[in-house]
Image 1: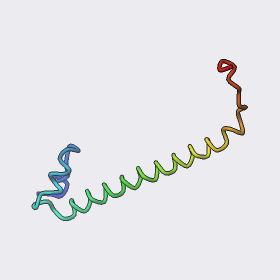
Image 2: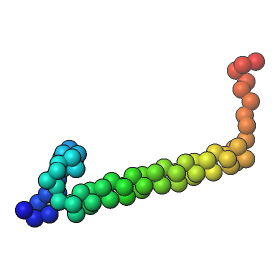
Image 3: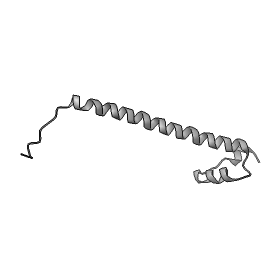
Image 4: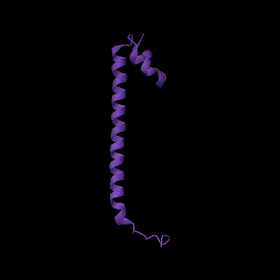
Length: 73
């Protein structure tokens, strides 16, 4: 059986393939590296997004004037 045919066709099948003792080592390595890379991309994206949001929030008070609430008086 070729290595390409061992790759999962559905996301749900990935865990079964990784837990199988009959999986070719190169397929197992490819799937683990794919998870590793995808996870790092997600975390880097979250970090960059949070830094950009922090920068926007840091400069917002300087951009917009503070308006008093006249309804509470």
